[in-house]
Image (cartoon, rainbow, N blue to C red; front, side, top):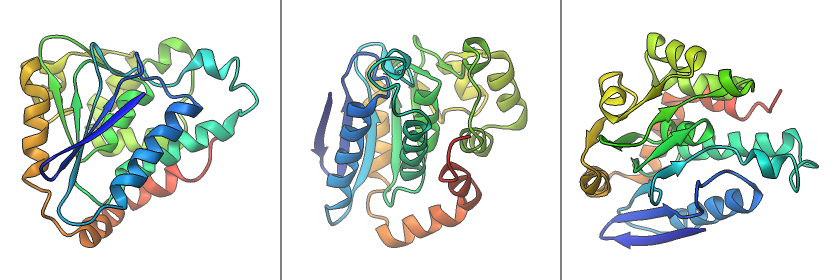
Length: 221
């Protein structure tokens, strides 16, 4: 489901569960990997990526309507807590977006400090308007904290799909590069920040995103 390896000072967390949709086992695996990284010491940074054509396609709606139906809003609360955890993670974080980042998968990418996306294939998309699902207040707060007002409007209200080049132009991602350069570029960016003090890095992030963190941990509607 996940692979965690270290390259110098950079932890590379590869999501490898097909479309990398969020269900209970996937969420538990992500949190366990973050636990392991937080238990480490010394200079470190985190890069997350996917495999094949998916970074993450968001919530596993099939699971939620079957095995996960008894979890209801509690599972959505846990997803928002994960987004909050990544947003405030006390290490530099970079999303290496190798392919599609849809819905909660796009929000996971937005929760990172920086984003690198492949330029040739794959889309960033918030499709809730088309799949008729509301955004929780914490999700909206996260999106608004990362995107310009016009881009947030277009992403949320039109469900537009942004390829790598357009995503870079609109400020959704920091870099759009060739597919073979996505992970190396993300690792290089992460490595350049790995020496930052963990305590102050986490403190500064919690201050920078205080309102978003409060919204994310406020519970699902």
